[in-house]
Length: 422
Ligand code: BGC
Image (tube, rainbow, N blue to C red; front, side):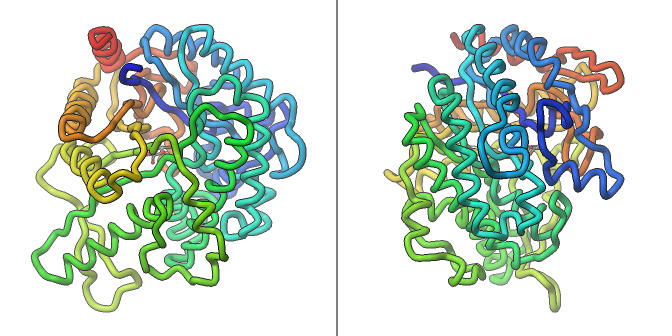
């Protein structure tokens, strides 16, 4: 099998149709409406326009498309039997992809938790892990015969941090290190879901993590320690237990981890999904601080419209680190998100960004890392969480007034690259 070229999206960021097909409320509906923020009520209207979006994927020539299922479409209240209309939407989408020869890569959770589960504590509540496994089984009952790669969770680190530690994302809790149980319960849910997926004959199972090399900014020992602490939190906490190790000691109350949990989390995987955007600059905190590190900008690099530094070498570094750190335990890697925010339909900066990151993947492969796929984030400009519609990550421009889709310069560039590599 050759290298997989793909693109990624997620349900709440593109679907709209939030009150259709019996969909229940998610934490993002509640969070955006309650705080008067831009919402995903319409987003890219993909719920209605998916045939046009599948045609865009086909013209692009990708061999795989990573999308997520909205849990509240399947279980409007977070538990109980599958909502037939919700299943039917993804059934149609999967068939439309297969008709064009595109492999569906399905993420089960990309942050849109049913509000009913948040009302009982969300991911801080251990029971949510069991609810997630039940939901995963329902989706697999319907689609295991056609989905090529199953991804349980998208970026449990980011969901824990922005959703439960700082409150910038739904559900908007600001518990700092008190958020760590939300990480353990997500990982437990992942492990339980793997068993449900396997029981239904899922072709291949993975998890997608966000990774960011922690670069100390300063020469003191305290800066080195701060960077190591941040690395343990961002990268190792979500990877060590997948491959049979204990959690790094960063403050998780041991009582949260029950006997047997680590065995469940360490269920063998067919692939690891890696999302990479940039390294993180870290310094020792000054004075008495609430956290054991300060995050500081990395200067001297080009920046995206998000202000994120463009550092393709960070991707090569982190792929190399994964191989070195986890060795034989590490399954093949798919880069399941890589991309950048820039304005404009003519977007040469995005071409430069993608070119650099694809070269970094090639270099990592030459270094001996088993990387099997690269997925651009994202197909469409979309609802960029706390940033609303102000940050455009798409290969395809979306006019949010008219919903007109216009392929960008980067779309043509990626299409040509895929063709040339066949
Ligand atoms: C998330 C995407 C998001 C992207 C850009 C990733 O952390 O998985 O949903 O749009 O970053 O911020």
